[in-house]
Length: 218
Ligand code: 1PX
Image (cartoon, rainbow, N blue to C red):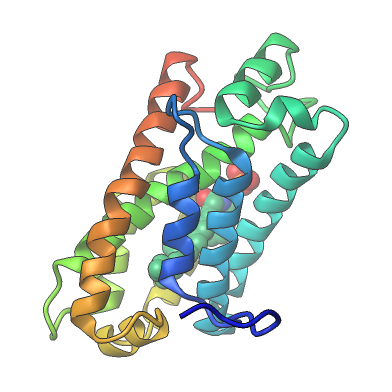
């Protein structure tokens, strides 16, 4: 049922994030930066609803989202419409620090790479959640997904802080409820719909970065 104007849903909903990731891919499989960033905004909203222990994580994500938004809204914004055009523009104009940090600490390429790595964590975590059973622990699923992905790019102190935050995650049932989808079976079904989308966006970006040797940007 359509909402009447003005009664916009305030709470996080997984549906919203799913819709945004659907919009991410163009017909020729390019990734729209605007929708990619909007997807992350939705995820951060979810993270914030879990409490302030996750503040240091959402703060970093918000910083990175803001860097990308300022590129999008900047005078060269038209070069940042897709991740593909951003990579081409920044590389052609030597706007990326390729081997060590230097004059371009906030390039779109290195900033997006951090979110891209986090997207892999998300994919692994949501897949675990989708196939989990009632007695599965969100903290364990989250930590396993993290260790398999993002952790490899984080120093010890960040890994330690992340590990501590994971222990504060709500249990599976409460976690599924905050997603605002409905009963667990419906969440599982929606995750089944969202995962291939997230995975495709991840794969396309991964391939693009790999082709241009950008996977280890400092
Ligand atoms: C539908 C439910 C899904 C749950 C959504 C949760 C959204 C999570 C958003 C996580 C965004 C993390 C971005 C991290 C980017 C990053 O790797 N930054 C590091 C490197 O940046 P730099 O600029 O220094 O090169 C930076 O050092 C990060 C610091 C903050 C700690 C990052 C820990 C990441 C843990 C990810 C798991 C989130 C757990 C949420 C539980 C639901």
